[in-house]
Length: 170
Figure 1 (cartoon, rainbow, N blue to C red):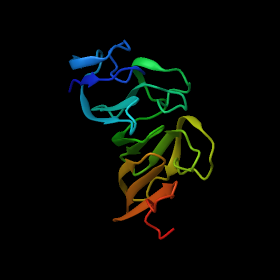
Figure 2 (cartoon, helix red, strand yellow):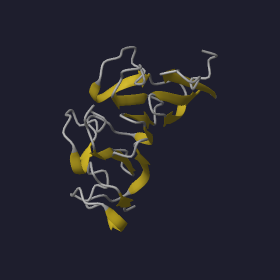
Figure 3 (cartoon, rainbow, N blue to C red):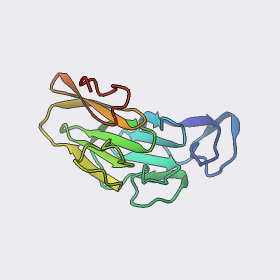
């Protein structure tokens, strides 16, 4: 249930309280009971899903991708605001997602291409609903500026579609 990290740390994405590059694994202090981790597509922020259903985030936060209500970069894990009962997480380039046990998909961060799925292109510093409860959502995935979810046995994608990544023929 602990998390270990290594590599570039120019934005605090290793979560060890520093911005020092690490060539060997270092423990991310204060994290226990972690079930899953996710790293931002471009590697500058990180997420952890804990066994109690909460989500922690750290690293670069220029667009609110840490979900803590700020744009302050964090070198140590902070709680993503207002989430509980989370069963899956995903990290895009500058946005992130959480799937709750009730099938609700929550998203936060950059939304320039509608990748948050809330019907807007407004940046969100805290989680907002992308897919409502009862939808049958069972997993989430994030690309650089698009997002996909398994919903009711099918796949739904939204956001930027410049290379056909949404799979809708566009």
